[in-house]
Length: 164
Figure (spheres, rainbow, N blue to C red):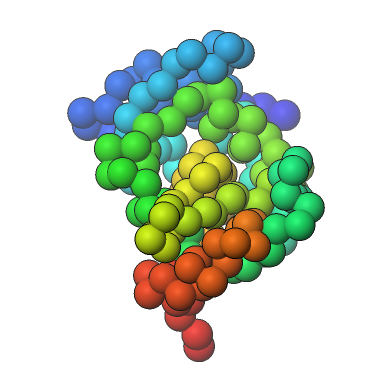
């Protein structure tokens, strides 16, 4: 498969990290991180992998979540349970691993949890969420949630999905 050309780098964003995200050229040890600050600052497509937004994804349970509930949640609201400065702090190796998995038609469920007091918090899946939103245009996805946190997550007002 021929690689696509590099899209224009957004103003104020590191060309080095933008290129590494887009082309799948990264350090395998996962030591590089960069804050892209917004969804719009991320590459709009992968230069290496073909993704089809019209092809439904198959979601898999992450290891250790066999007894968790699976519920549909809005991706943006799920991401916003993280501190603002961490939402787009991404690792090129992880981004490209998720992009590869999505190009193969599958993805692990993101994992939503809750803090004491009931406020939801994203436990795992920031790269999956951001990649699904940016490269596939998805607005919601199935998440795994521990049984003891399901009531708090379902009750969170920002997680009410819009219905047609």
